[in-house]
Image 1 (cartoon, one colour):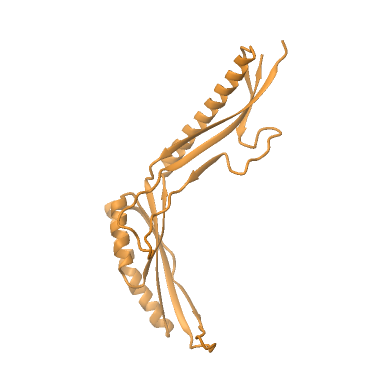
Image 2 (image 1 turned 180 degrees about the horizontal axis):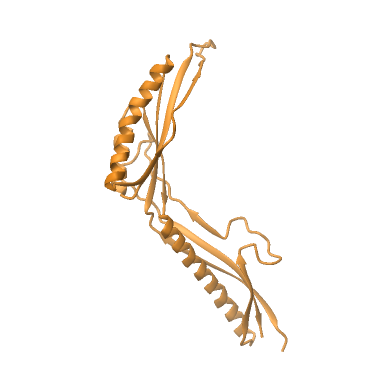
Length: 221
């Protein structure tokens, strides 16, 4: 009895509650004198950095980073088309990783109430070790699905022996056509925001979806 080639695809996905919330906030000031603007931005950011340092030391947050101060100047135009005097600007962006989402909510509410501070986006992630573990588990399950499909096809045509020949991520199998998306992907939930763009008091992040797909080729005899 001649061998039959069976080519199948296997997919699997897992939904995991986020473990980390990455908050992005910024400080910005402007004024007529460069020196005064630099002093004001330093005074504005210093207590925020001190607070984040204390929170990390106490275990309240996983980590935080702060960019260097950006300073620039321009000459704006008024409604009559006349260029005005030079205006200096300064800004700093900060990022903090929270594991306690209620603590994050309180912190963002405080940041939003400070003049010169702006709340940006919040992204949701898994801890690196969790992500790696789940990706392995999902990939393993995707392979199992492919094997089950190939086995069903083989049994349907009366073949008892199934021998794996190739297995690859989607689009990487010999003569395969690459799909629009990758074989493994992660989708991040976004933070809810109200009409004026301030941080909401409570967070309800969606689960993070990790999915994997494989293509496999077998010989059935």
